[in-house]
Image (tube, rainbow, N blue to C red; front, side, top):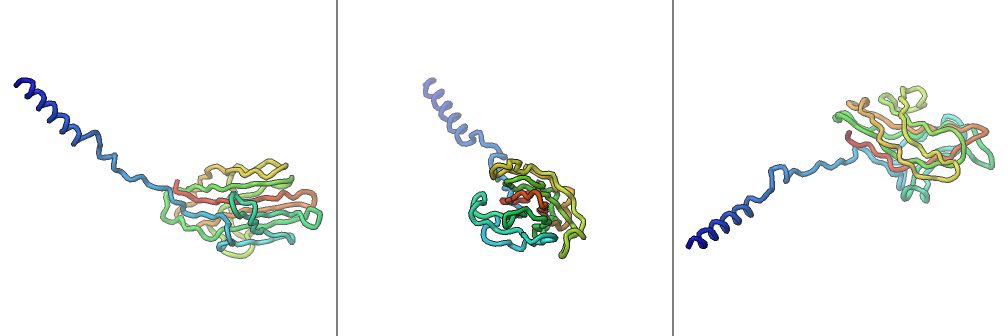
Length: 194
């Protein structure tokens, strides 16, 4: 009888334990996904990006073969067998960060040949026309530095939180000279909540 009683108590305790288990309230919290606030892979067209050639005949173009993967934006001042003086901007559409508390920018670059580094900029007052008339802030990023071959390189996380609260535009400014013109490729641009 004593054994049956202990057995009943044990089974009752075991079933109670199974029903209550070790699941806590926080085990049911649904994780927040970091959905991009903005993304661009240049897969089929320019998607409202603005291309402005300040100097030189060469312009930003879509490359449908060498993106990471697929297509990418590419710019080179080399044409007709020689280097050419160029200043060309690739400017994003307006990106709404008015309701954000923080944001970060990431992208990838690949380059080849010697020449000027690609400049990455952000503006809150550019609308149209010559970008040199607007206020731009330089952003520091990791770029591909291998001049012998194209190596897709992550920019790192670039904090742009000081620009939230309104609209911004991101720009890639390319320059080349008559003696040096790097070919730059840009792909996989993302702005994420920070």
